[in-house]
Length: 287
Ligand code: HIF
Image 1 (tube, rainbow, N blue to C red):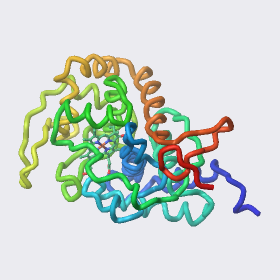
Image 2 (image 1 turned 90 degrees about the vertical axis):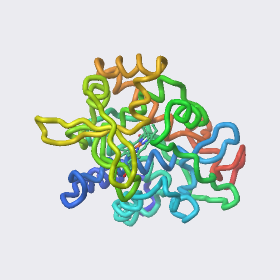
Image 3 (image 1 turned 30 degrees about the vertical axis):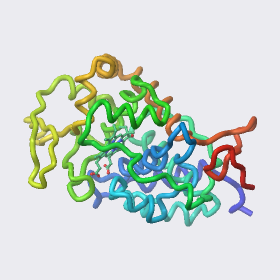
Image 4 (image 1 turned 135 degrees about the horizontal axis):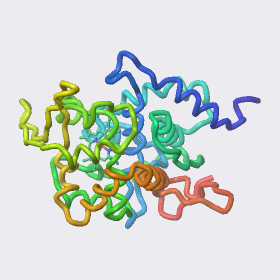
């Protein structure tokens, strides 16, 4: 039966074909799918081995209703037809694969991805809210959040290049605008602009503080979050911003590795690549 053949290439094609969304944002579902993938994984806490993409907990109010996840329902709705056409795939696999495939389709690197996550959720083990980063804060916060997941300073900077994609929405995060002119094309422009432009602080009507630069050629105001600019005021982060601004290939390679690592947080695999901790619990196994 075709429904039992796990044809991930078919899922990838279905994801690729839904990316074009003329009525939505910059005409693409890609960036919000990348954000969905990252937020599904970014709850991971290495010390307790909880959180991560296994379980797809964002389907439920406790996690999905976290204000940090505002707007990601759009991403989940975009993916529903793919799930309907491939009912055998778990949401946790679908969301992570969608992020990886969207990056590729937007001109980014190939990111290694493996299936096997389950949608098993143990309510008592859901990650508490507050595990995702707060963009209004600075370096100490960034380190606290990403060290908790097991990333180092270089990896934090490499990951941050994903803000080359998409935009902030005042009705979701309170921040407003895109980081680059062409936010549906993956590149290292974010790092270049961060170093080369003069960013000035702007307080939006809603009281939210961000950094802006008016691009005369594009006649558009671009933005940076406080956490973005924190990368160039830090002596350990900044050298990596400089490397990635001048060396796109290096950025693509490092980004692919580190985004792949993000998608695997909390997943333990056996010899054949099968997931052995299917219940999101420490060392647990549910068949
Ligand atoms: Fe984002 N991020 N992110 N982010 N993010 C937003 C949007 C996107 C942070 C805050 C925000 C990462 C890290 C961090 C994407 C991908 C990644 C928004 C705007 C905020 C506030 C949301 C909205 O209003 O719709 C912070 C504080 C982070 C810690 C550094 C990752 C590395 C950059 C891990 C990552 O991959 C993407 C893509 C978007 C665009 C979403 C869209 O709807 O267009």
